[in-house]
Length: 96
Image 1: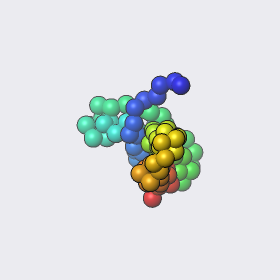
Image 2 (image 1 turned 90 degrees about the horizontal axis):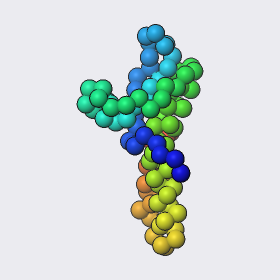
Image 3 (image 1 turned 180 degrees about the horizontal axis):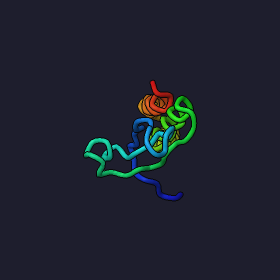
Image 4 (image 1 turned 60 degrees about the vertical axis):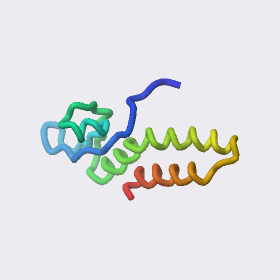
């Protein structure tokens, strides 16, 4: 499997500048340490769709980790903890 930018990722604010209508997705350290982190992607489209898509993209690292854990835990017979993590990742993707 290919490597990706380590999570967590966060959704930035709707860009109103030169690339109006885009929503950035950054590494969490970008937001927490005054932009020393990394831009993961910019999502284009109407504001509602851009935010919805950006939330789903930002949840990708957690979703991938939760799915990996589901497979591992299912094979080991332990599911409750993993199901709770999967639900949290889904809620993040839905903006809940």
